[in-house]
Image (cartoon, rainbow, N blue to C red; front, top):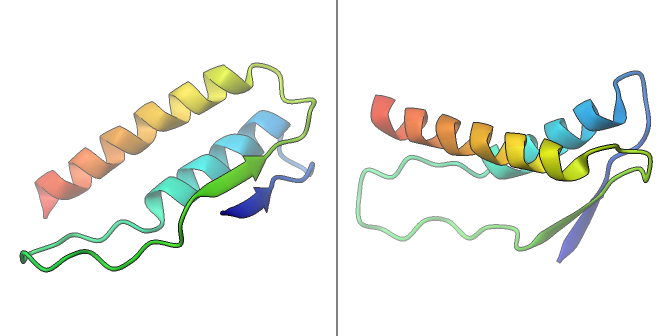
Length: 78
């Protein structure tokens, strides 16, 4: 597994966590037009957020719903 640290910055900790989760989840998307197996992924990822993130579970749930919707839309468009 590899790790991804979400540092504090100009954006809120919640915004940074959401951006990291969405980026990691959407980054490897590849529309397949054939039956060939997809390219290998980097493996499991651990995102370490600042402990000050309030409502991290809600942020993760919202990001997961967003990612699922984006992936569905990408597949439908392609």
